[in-house]
Image (cartoon, rainbow, N blue to C red):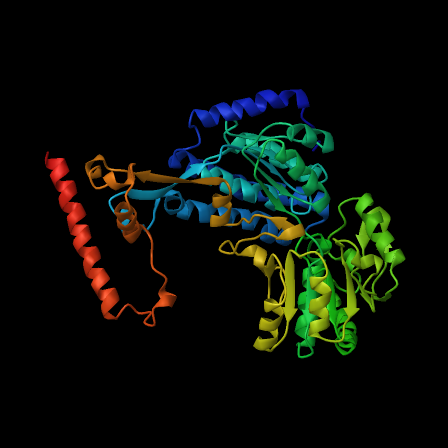
Length: 509
């Protein structure tokens, strides 16, 4: 299937049409949102084979891997939104001070407007359509831009979207850098981008021209810290799984290992068994082992391997014509090695020897904040120490990558690994403006007379008493059981009765 790029001259009308649909409240009714979520679910459910075939052509993904990490996760998000949309979209009533008890204060959930979602090639179904679930649930209209590098998947999604989703609200735009930059010239109400930090900076700079908020799901070098008490066979299996799933082309894949020399040597002995158990003696012939997306990325990875000063102790073979790189482990990697300068994004796992947990923590903290951190230890105190002294977008203890599968957990980075979060309720919140709403009854005008000039000192004391709390730390009894606090409670109750009495008289007159 051929992927046809859109004509940039069509963009102004396309975006204007979506803005018009939003202005006419097409996407705001909850019934409409639910219907579109059902349609997106059906798109995925009824076309599994075609989508899996496209993912295989683009990335050599097995059907099981595609179902688990792409189609299944987005379907689950659709169901999560359908099951919870009424609650998510309901107004939230907030607690207020005594001064505002008669006022009704709540938070109204408004869709932000027309949004732009830019997907990535490594999970071309997941990272494109999962944000769309939140945009639909929130009531937005959307321009959806698949990655042109996963051309087969983009072509299938483009064809299916026009059959299942309302084109008046959701439009697919295909293209490369030229088309993307053209899109960024227009004002959107939110931009959601998944990809590299370098392009993330371009997205953010373009958004700043219109003061458009952005969610940037980037990546970085996600480290593994291995304590000396780890279970070597289980650790080896879980690290090989995380590093070779989707051929290492995952933003939260374990990027490198920090451990002592003793643990390094034990892993080197155990990892070949983990690789063989998963992919056989020749991973190139395994139906479960993926491929690098294209020759440019293959050459980048080959160049990193050729320049490393570490020892290639496992794997290292490759086939450019097949875009195949064998699962590769590199030991004794210097801290300033070529493999440590950028996110690897491939099936190459460097091991950096450190003297201690503190040495590992110091190394991590001297670099950009990672999207994920993977500490391994049997000791809870060791894990707590690592978490208390590091930062990361997310963390999985004694495993890798599982955090991306839980809708209840916010997924996102911090610092150079991104900004904003999504999955489940957090995707809905990303595309929702929480509008503060407060009503002021006319019946209490006499009670509010003290706010008008000219002001008296007594007016200030009266208002302060009801508006502002007193600090608990100035009183020895924090439970509110002493006579002073009890007396204040009595005064507050009397004042509430007085306010209600005044309001009742105003309404009667």
